[in-house]
Image 1 (cartoon, rainbow, N blue to C red):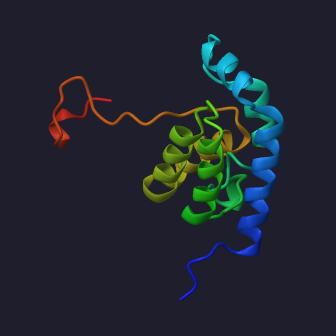
Image 2: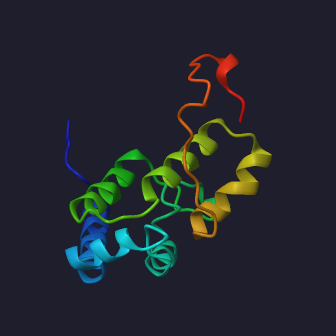
Length: 138
């Protein structure tokens, strides 16, 4: 059994590393983190144009239709540079919508996640602190 990355995944890794090395050196990361947004809308748009925000979104909805391992490559590289962005949260929401959303929800939200025009964040717990369905109000 081969546990290595595919050639395509290594190409993705190299592209992400090159992009982040050029656009997110530590001084820039600090500047972005201290800004009012906490991320760079310019770099977010560039990442969207490269297809990285829609990596796990189905092709029919504007994404690349790839899976968890491909996402791992992207997240590993963004973590290597401490790149501040809503990438993890937005991507996790895209996966939740892809796997559990209705077709109408998927059509409404996934294209916006893929093109970067929508930023999502998972809400892991309500103010009530209830872990069961009775604690969900949103």
